[in-house]
Image 1: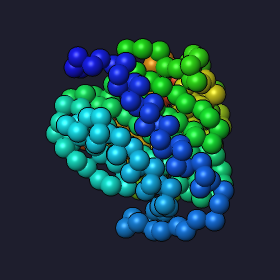
Image 2: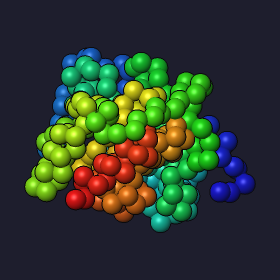
Image 3: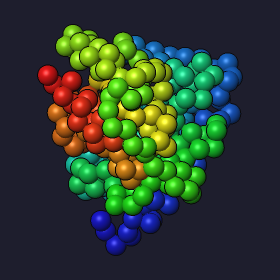
Image 4: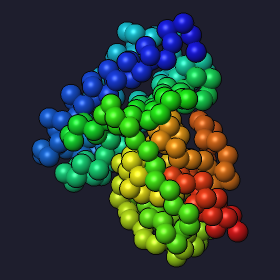
Length: 259
């Protein structure tokens, strides 16, 4: 990383989260219009305006950096530094008045996530992951919990509808092996995994802006997050995610995903 060092980028990431939160909070639990994107997913003015606020800061502070955002696409993604933004991960929860959503902010250096933030602007909760450092939750410590076996694990996914064909069969195997299964968390599930309340998360169709910020957060909390083949995640990953607090459960999950 360049002479500015990680501290400057961490501070900038925090400013981005603050700016997004200032936009999002006034819209939460209000009667706002809901549009439908080409993939049939919902989007609101809160999504668009919060990403625009973050992009405005980045344009002023680091105009040579790349940006990949859910709402306004890609700019200079071949740059050494690329910011990956999801202004509201969990828009369906947001429009339902449920605070299980968050703003995701990642900084990639030469394709590797080095800073990640999960920010819940309504609850005032923020998880910060920095490559090589312990994850922080509102300034304090965050850590995964041990879990030796799938039979003892709490499994989470955002929705069973994301699994089709062979992926659905693989998820069914995992669900049958886990102690319990919960749905509907979006990025908040990964935050809870990093806090030691969830053991395993399996997803099947995430985009880079859905998972890049999660990587430093989970790793810094002592967990592991990969694709279904056990490979590190990056901009070119296929969107199938396996995250666990304990490497033993992660390995068992991969065995069932790839019998």
